[in-house]
Image 1 (cartoon, rainbow, N blue to C red):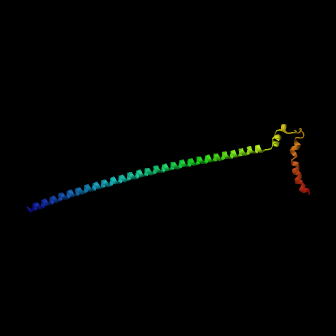
Image 2: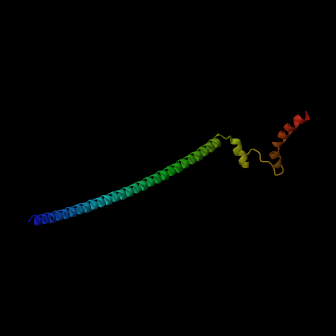
Image 3: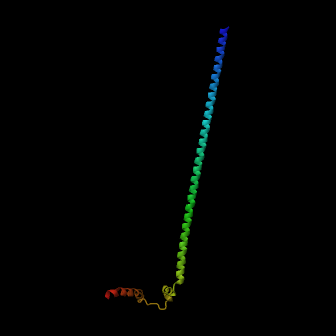
Length: 144
């Protein structure tokens, strides 16, 4: 009778041990699944973070490109303004010079307005006349 009881107890212990091992294996399996799920979740988060980083990088690059284009456009606009201002200044100076010019050059430009028009043979002489005094003044120190 004691022998039968011992055998029954051993059988019962073996079954309990088997159940315990099965429970532990099940726990280990669940823990592994949980670990894998966590890993997958972290990988997905990392992928999303990388996508967000790349999108932000692209957005910043686009912003920088637009800012550079705006800067270049502003530079070109300012250069155009400066050129226009320079042209206006030159035109204003020319207009001022024209207004301030004495009437004599205008008469020289218009031979009909000149008091006395030279004859054909005399046309060359007045043109050379200014050169003569300059030559004479240059020769005068040499003669002295």
